[in-house]
Length: 367
Image (cartoon, rainbow, N blue to C red; front, side):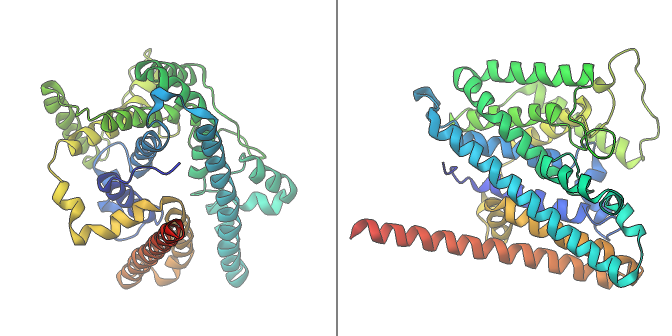
């Protein structure tokens, strides 16, 4: 099932991809200027929300006629594609980081990326990679997407019946995961996933609801939200710019109501990305999305998986090489240029290929 292309969604997804690329290079000259430093959410929340919106366009269109087994199969096949992409990404990442370790003999690099377990417990680590329970640093977002997509058929069935029913069930799972500490374990290490899918699925469900509303022509507009949403964003920006001067503790209230935990997507982070999305939706940005200068981001947003994978490999390579250049500005600019040009070139090549295939299909159909 092919999603309806919407330039605004693709633009912000491309923006999220480039932001993730920069955020994956700590210390980069632009690292302090990404929007994660001006609030309590970052590009990961934005990307998951937009993934839910796009899923609504792809799988909930004409849902009144029933979802059908074909759409469910499409979802499961997409989950499998992401799973295979994750395995390939881990392999390439290990090769990139391992090549640096072999060249320099600096085994500390393996610890930076939590890859030292590959040396200590190679068999267990390989099994963990296949089970998605061993997730090296910066390689833990695709397992989240795979898990959400495995849950998506249930969400689609619920949303096809009623948007409120789907949101209610998803919210119930979110609250239960927070209150009872539900989270898939990691192995062979201890602890839980870096992104708890039982919590993050609610943000995806919010994206489904937003996508349904957009598809139905519903435009959210509320005078209270027009005041509350930007006020919350301003307060969060001030708090972040002051470097979180006070550690909040509103016990005995549950921690997810006031904490800033990214692993379990606590309420302040969830509300922040929703407020951000609401405020952006109220802006007249149609001309921006159609502008020639915006097209690289739009095209990148059309191909999120391959662009994300390439950006991740480039950012990991930049991380291991950057210390050798002592954080030089020239190297940071070179990293940025390589990342933008590389991801952009890949996206345009895939777009060109997609249009070529469609033209060939139309030509064959007219014969």
